[in-house]
Length: 315
Image 1 (cartoon, one colour):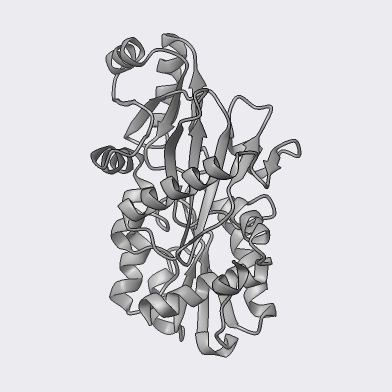
Image 2 (cartoon, helix red, strand yellow):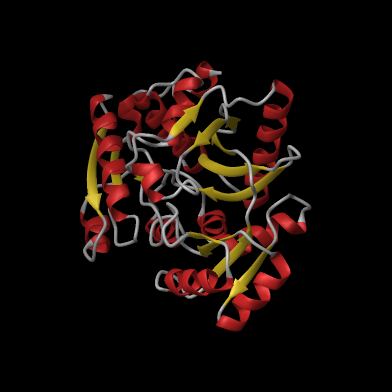
């Protein structure tokens, strides 16, 4: 698989590349780590790359700097939700990853679920929470346990697993501090998997394990006891099923370039789609680099492949 994924472009062909990272979202600290690693890899590969910590001076930087293309490694709102993609489209700067619509859809967990359900793709039953009465209705309809999520956050920020109406109301209030729109989903008991795509290829699935109640922010970025299984532990037939499902899930949203899909498996072996990340983490704890290594790409080759897709997709 690795030869098909590797970039064959001369690093100088990318021109001057702005690595956009940091920003103002709740995922700023993760983005700073991802961006520094991406920038270092590009520079060591011979790419004329420089970093922009996205702030209030971004428009001035985009117009005053010579920029031939942008590597978007902003996580969360303001970078992964279509707004940065739209700005770069207007500025005429090619960029990595998905376009405006796909980015906006994938960042919105509610609309993502609606698209998937319209196509018959499996995703956990859910409700939208805007009041204590909504919480009580959701508890009666969905049962416990449940998982509460801000609709427009990533990295498990604002998420909580709950087992009672009182805990659900508290979790809704907590999530509402991050987002005006809050979802609650049926809890799927079973193993969790994540599957990355890169340049149209589905990478090996990763099985996740954590002693935490779920794969939360600490398990993703800080803990040393999180388990990553590659091979993922599924039979060859079930892994193919998982890969095909995630490919269909990404296609439904119009995903381009690279992304990572999170999936649960229940006790009967059925898979349930959770969400798609269109600018996944690229830190030393991150999953896409792990999957790329399993496919035969080191970190530098992965970064170059992502950047090469921006040339093929947007010139």
